[in-house]
Length: 385
Image (cartoon, rainbow, N blue to C red; front, side, top):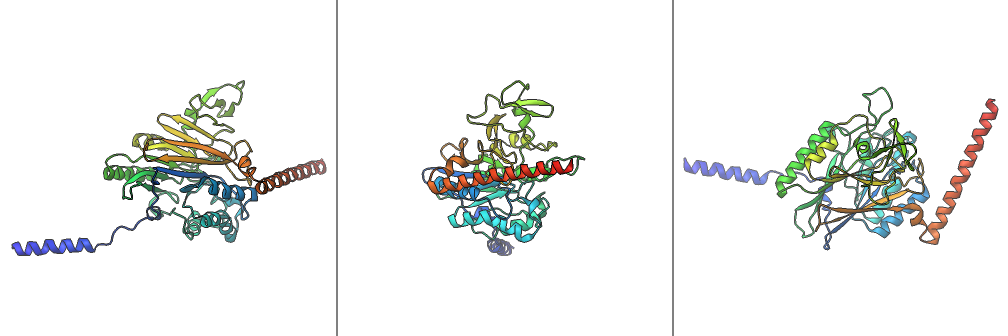
């Protein structure tokens, strides 16, 4: 009997050794790692929101910032293309390739989430668009399949600088959806409960594996509803006040220097409990969003920073006061902190004569375009009368 038991146990051991290891995700395969000096840099672009031909000024800005800032990872926080003008599959493919070709040539890993415009009226679904991104060697995003709502909710581990398999920092990537179809009026979507359950399960697993919460930053397109709790209510006489929801708001005194509230934030009308779950999880330092093109701020709120990155695109609205990208610097030696700043498109393109000329021609063309549109509108009004 003892011999039989020994043989049985041996067979179990061999069978266990023969079982295939769990396949690594693209984000895990990338093996992003803190550098020897303990630093890691993220460059966050958002809301290119362009069609099949990316504006030349935007393209120059992307190239210059990546080359000069030397990020370890690029994160795109949605509305990467303007789906509403992508009525043909080839347009979707060309639009994505406009910026992904730049990142591929420069060899910088790219993670991204989708926004409300990526799929809007587009010829390709988000799942089909994900397949285009996956053709690039620098892409580390992936579609989790039908297990979770949306497309592209995943996490990106950043490993320790010592070459080990220890995850020293983590990035949560949430698909915050597009439009809320449960309400009768125009409203934005939100992160769903099954995504939050996945977050909590994955956070707990990482915490158990590494002896405590792994510090993290969350990225998504649409900001959480708590932004209006974080802002300061005021009246219309206050300089810089923004009207929203029947009242006026300004940035609180706790907002980071250089923060700009240029428009009313547009979160979902539905509060899914995401912020509270991230807060209770205890790992998230900041939640970074795009969506609101002329907002550029960092607002501490109840232990989590609410961060908005401005657009660097020209196909939709924006302004030269905020248009640019956000840099997020991590340090392995102080894992519960981070540093962030924005780089402005006009200042960046003005650094050398060639790019400055591109920018000046670009702005001149925009002024001519606006003038032509204005004259056309006036002509239509006269004809109508």
